[in-house]
Amino acid sequence: MNEVTLNGRSIKYEVVIRPVKYVRIYVLPEGILRIVAPRKNVENVLRLKSDWILKRLEEIDKHKRNANIGFPVFGKFYKVEEGKRTEIVGNTIFVSTLKNLERFLKKELRNKVGKIIKERTTKIGKTPKKIFIRKHKNKWGSCSSKGNLALNLALVALPDELIDYVVTHELAHLIELNHSKDFWRVVEKFHPDYKEKRKELRKWWIIVNNNEYWKKLMGGV
Image (cartoon, rainbow, N blue to C red; front, side, top):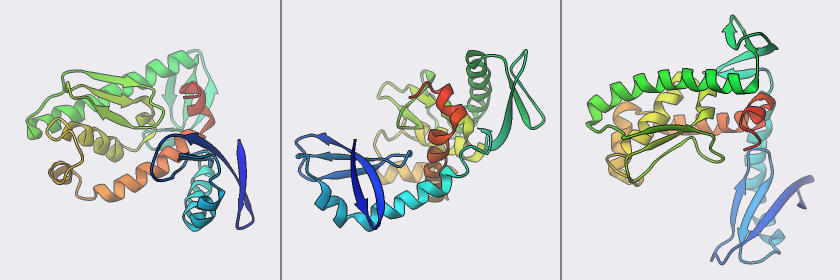
C-alpha cells in the first residue's frame, strides 16, 4: 500500500495498472484510494485532484463516525447481544450464530422485497424471472439481460424507502437495461427524488462497509 500526503493528511492508496487512457480515482468506503492508471507513478494526478479527494474523505469521515453506534437493520441501529435464538426484541438483536443471523435477515429482506416487487411489477408491466440475494462487494443490486435480479444482502441495513428505490431501480432495467433517459424516466415515476436517494445510498454504503457487525456478516466482502 502506498501513501501520499495531501494538505497535511496522509492517505493510503493502491494502483491498479491497466491500459487506460485517463487515470481513474476511486475513493473506497474505508477511506483508501484505488487508482486505475497506465503507470505506477500517479502522485502528480492525486495532487491535482486533491480538493476533490479531500472532500470525499471528509464525507467518509463523517459517516464512519456513525457506523458503529449499533447494528443497522432497516435504517434503525440495534444493540447486539448473544441469545439462544436470533430475533429482534425492542432495541436489541439477539444472535445465536452468525449463520442464523444471515438466515434471519435474508428471510426478512425477501418478505420486504417480495411486497415491493408485487406492487411495482403491476405498474411496470414486467416481472423478474428469478430473484437472488447475494453478498455483493461493490453494488446494491443488479439486473441481468435474462431478467434476473441479484440483490445485496446489505440492503437489510437500509431504511424502507431506500430499499424500495434500489428494487425499483433494478426492476426498471427489465425495460431499459442501460441508464438512458428513458430508464430514468421509469425510475422517476416512482421516485421523483431519486437523485437525493442516490446520495443517501452513498452514505449508507460507507456505514455498512465500516460497521463491524456487517463486516463480519459479509465475510470480509
